[in-house]
Image 1 (cartoon, rainbow, N blue to C red):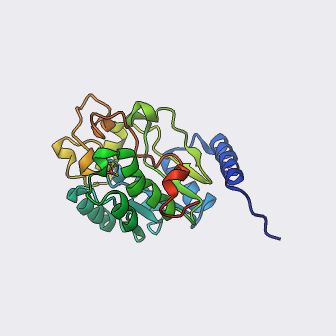
Image 2: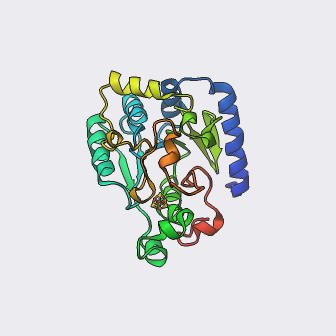
Image 3: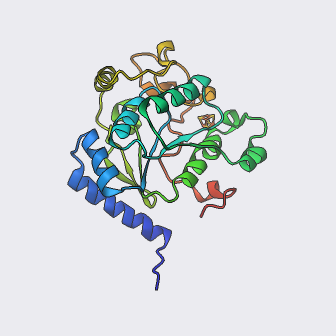
Length: 251
Ligand code: SF4
């Protein structure tokens, strides 16, 4: 007899596993944590989600050194800077990544709710749901865990990040949670990694062109995202609400 667990039970089990992993491995450094996660804890069942933004090359480089066949999910919202798309392809080739997955919004969602492409101005939370949260939820089905590049220094809202946390029924891993800007710069230099071309123009956190501005050197790097709005996150770092899952039929 096959035992079917409810979503609430799956979420509770993931939370317990994350807590256990955090207690056991929470003090590991970035590369050791990645090796553990990719090779031992979730072999073949883990993906890296990357925006190919200003600092993304560090985590991509580490993952490529451990296993270049690790799936790398890129949420192609249709609103990225051309420079980001070019950087993505350059970096993937340079690092030898062999499983880059470009994930796009559902055409039916865009046709119904964002036919003019201006939903970001009317309802940015809904735009992020259609262009990021729901496509990611679909892309992560089949994976037990995913890796993010979030760092505590990026914004006050990211202080206190753990190494392991649960995200619905999955485990989410934040290997760079304690990294400082100087460490990232040192990794770029030591491994001769190319910078995102927009960094030289003052962009320090790079997302969709319609919601990204330059940020002052003394400000939170993410202050250039959704400038003028209280919004600070796109929503992929929380579970999609049931109401957001209507069009894709995700339960
Ligand atoms: S960052 Fe802006 S354009 Fe991109 S998905 Fe979110 S609201 Fe839409």
